[in-house]
Length: 570
Image (tube, rainbow, N blue to C red):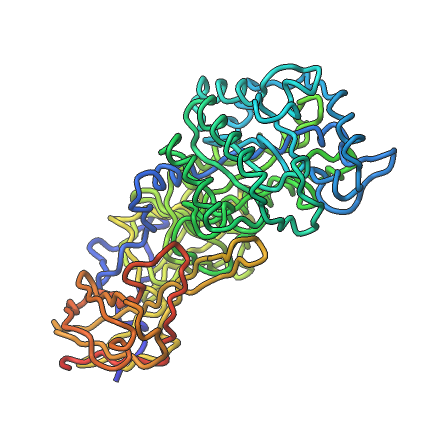
């Protein structure tokens, strides 16, 4: 009979001796766990984008000149960068705002320096927001910063050049909604794109992809394009900037990575590549003159926690500022970025350059790994004074509060238990650094041990999630893309897997056990034993079901497992 792997792997070891953190030599897990670090994408372009990890988002346009105020009154509805819609400003009146737009304090060198101080590796700026005003020199319209303002310069060109000088990647935000070109105000920004608008979009994309050097990321936003339009617009980017990563808001599942909802930190493990766009204030992205700016330490703490949570789960974090109309950065926002950078310098290898882990979220926080160093980000300091990390299969050499000194620890079965001081030294986000004896390996929570067979329930399977859409933001939905359980035995086994559940009969699925996989139809998946596979003794062996060749990241698996049996023969 199958049973949960509890206490089988390691005998409890309480650390004693002259120095806290000293372990008995040679104490290793008797079961070899799975690699604990989350791997980067196999696509070289996407993996290069993942390595950027942390970037600066800039929402800046003629709406910044208004600062969330129209006719002397704060516009409290909606984001301030969409003030033209929320205040129902006529086109002629809004165009007058451009006449007074003089960003003489726009300082690309200062912005790039600030990004670097914050630990950021790239910058993404709004080339055109929903108002249709282009913040770059374009031949497609005179409704742009060079032709319609007294400034007369191309700020995107200035910023792109400065990013290269300071070693930062450069990316552009591009709205597919364009009120100037004829889109009606729509609170959901879900407008279809008429054929008459396509030449303008195509021309502007060609300009952006041709005149600003290498582009790291193209951040499309909103609208409701057809699949043909999504493919055409993404195709322009890929032809002219083959190393640029395209976000999912090009829609119809044609992007390279999934952009989550504003300020969203996923509550479940996500497969594939993704990004969280975050703002310093949840109320707005563009400059708002009357925005409350208070509790700087709390704001830094919240955003460091967001950055760490996203990175620990495998995503990139793009954090926004909204400069004033004159181009200057709000000092509170600059101080927030400096505060994040100060924390990152105190923990230089805990986030930047570190990998996500397969531990998942813990009651106390999150975990990252960098080489042989495991970092535990303690977002909720345990009242018990003990931090418990389940499923650590690698031997531990020492444990420290990062930057503050050694901690006492013990092993309790598969768990690492660390004794914490009453109060952490780091008041922003304390980090516990665990020095490992080798590569991080873990024993997942849903590991099941069996003698000659495994009787598996639906709850023994972990779901891997992603997102997919049907061409717009409102149609975006979370999807299940993977079913995984983990097997362990004390003897070498030739095994066959039989599944009970519902699958798409004509779809093709890949069943993988360890390093061996087979492709079967949905009809075969639920009607006959699949195998043979090898289950290696005293080693956690994952059993995973995915689509054999998903059409896109996030395509629903289309298979619900009710139960499964793994046996020595068909």
